[in-house]
Length: 119
Image 1 (cartoon, rainbow, N blue to C red):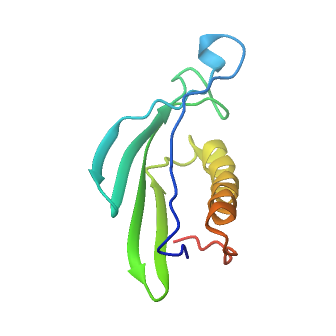
Image 2 (cartoon, rainbow, N blue to C red; image 1 turned 90 degrees about the vertical axis):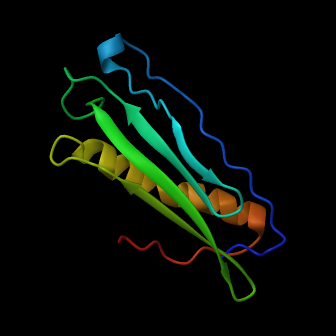
């Protein structure tokens, strides 16, 4: 939970892997919705149709939601739209990566992170 006084800036950046364009895994976001102090929705796309596993085509969405809670603000992240088995590699990697993002946010907010919940 983030304290009400905590200010957190979230940004997305495009980054690529080395190698041929077909092997690059890019995050190409489009912001779909912004409700100040409440909600941010953007796409998480990348990959290439010729790839299997790492670098496969990925067309997903990310939603960040802030809600008031006792003593602070609750931050909820939903990353949806993974296609199994095509996106299994990305799902596993991002499932391991998002908790690290929350750890960084918690370091900024100054509060410990509860265990991640998959829902």
